[in-house]
Image 1 (cartoon, rainbow, N blue to C red):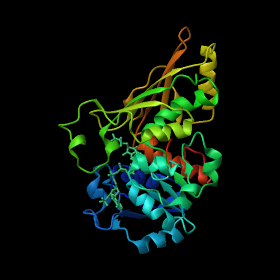
Image 2: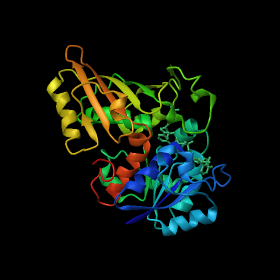
Image 3: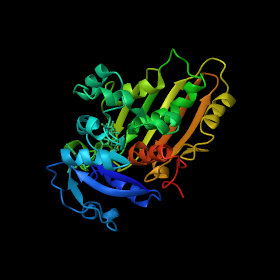
Image 4: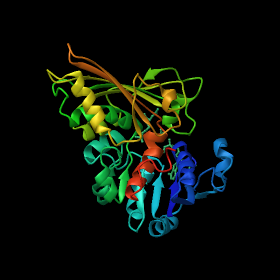
Length: 337
Ligand SMILES: NC(=O)C1=CN([C@@H]2O[C@H](COP(=O)(O)OP(=O)(O)OC[C@H]3O[C@@H](n4cnc5c(N)ncnc54)[C@H](OP(=O)(O)O)[C@@H]3O)[C@@H](O)[C@H]2O)C=CC1
Ligand SMILES: CC(=O)N[C@@H](CCC(=O)OP(=O)(O)O)C(=O)O
């Protein structure tokens, strides 16, 4: 068994991790932490999340001493914390034997200038940043297997890159035309803390972060191509539907497009190539990425849809996929029966 602790365990992704680690056959959940002055310190996770009412884990306030202890005693520490907290703690946490999987955006972007521009604070944890491996599980398996620090991808980049990377890898994308990604997320993407913009009465389908969302440079970095990315907030709880429009090189055939997806995901049990356009309800509360596409050979334009659960494949279950790879277990262990 591998010893695991979760920091930020009371939030949406943290609580999902508690459930996934608890049910995993090879993982033992040793500690569940919240911030030093958390209003939930000392409470049981069961009291906060009704779906975890059968579990018994106390939320302990984190401290510097505990971070040092976790670094030396845990096999894995999962960070489901704000970007700033993950950034500030990584050097301490990664100084021991523990391997760290960070769900925040703090270690995904290697260019520190771009990072500061989009995250609003300077990156100073440079040693950890250099070591961090991007945890898009279907695409960086060999690097993930050797990693000490995993930057788990953002939810929108997971959906977008799952749709786009097969095309880039097969050289089908027309470099002259940027892929256009329109994606809709449920409100859990904004986290558990109360805010007016994600409150039930206020949310009505709307674009936000237009031409400036922090996931744009993340998608571009791991696709190696500029994109137009427009996120929308929808009035539902969980899931992301990303509709991606691309121009393919002249002469590309439907058969080549189909082959790009079937070959890329031939050994990927978490990716489901669907016979029709997927719905969010098909993937909500599951670890899957569902994909479907349609191609107009005459114009060279293709439309691909990717559906994921933002809290699962967009965060917690993708972290578990990475952990499975790091421990040489089948990637779907503890996720798919
Ligand atoms: N929600 C989603 O769909 C996705 C989220 N992410 C990323 O995952 C991380 C967690 O997101 P999410 O679960 O939605 O967030 P939540 O707001 O739901 O939860 C945040 C958690 O972190 C704790 N926390 C807050 N501030 C600190 C701090 N300074 N030190 C330690 N703990 C702290 C909170 O508890 P308390 O404040 O009581 O201490 C809570 O447990 C974020 O970085 C987010 O960007 C990534 C992909 C998808
Ligand atoms: C609906 C909503 O607000 N979503 C969040 C994205 C959450 C997430 O995946 O991203 P990070 O890990 O990069 O924070 C947003 O747009 O900021």
